[in-house]
Image 1: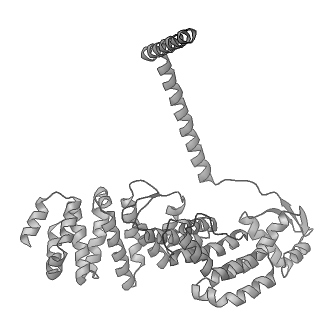
Image 2: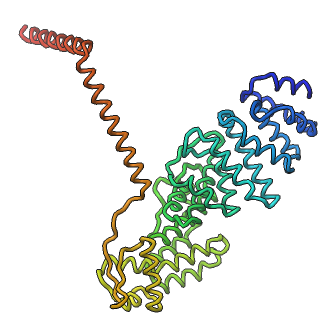
Image 3: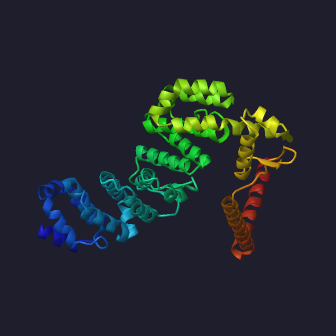
Length: 416
């Protein structure tokens, strides 16, 4: 073992070191007690590849659930050079999974959130890159209900993908967890987008994750705008068959919600309640039912400019004017409708919903326009420089002269 340590200290810290150590797996497992000794003689900064391999082997040897092992893994995530971690993302992501598993066993999941968040940032070669460690990070945030911690990284769904360490199942779970976090943050539009990405990801076989994502996509879409989702045409055939056979009760319920008919929705809810409960989706199903009054009011804004509170109570099937007022004020505050309430006359005046864009979207569009304008100016300058250069003029004249000579030859042949 002393010779091994000497070789590690002398060898360059490359990915081959990690590979060679993993090949000696059996030797390390037979001398598990020596791994801790070797770890004290190498550093995560200077021997990152060896450090990762030794931590993985130590866990496999049964010594990876203690406080000391957790401390070493967190230290690795914190101080190891980013470029070295990125070179072995797959193995580092495995360490991230193990770290989360240990904290789950200790019922301290929240303690894993910040180390995993730091690791994800350090594994990203570019901002907005989705790495193999994001799955563990998002899952930890869901288990600990730290949705606010993960949500900022999900603002732009147009992620780059770092392929190392990702298999199709890992990608599906990462996208699914992203949708769960957005749903918990009441961002139903983004949640629906991530669930849609989950079911449309390339797959050669059906997955339980895709089925669960489709169920939530159906319910979230009803809550958001009372519309019914159809399976996208780009979904692979095996996944399509699984969604069709496994989600018929959900599709039937969403169709009932789309009619905005309370009795039909209640009947469908009662018949499918056991399924929703066993799937853990009863809360979402009840939110669909609760959203019907809101959707009926939104329908009224497309038909009427002015309505009395009494008419709104009747047409939206509400219980009282107080309930109507509370619901209208909430919808106005949330920007779901544009309306003005005249409390004296008991009348509501609806106006057209303005087409607005988020500030971040406008800023990004402005940046893209500026880049395009700058590129256009650069191309114009280059074009002008080329057209005025002596070399270009000489080459153009030569080409033109060659073309004229060719035409003369053709005319001569024709006359002949």
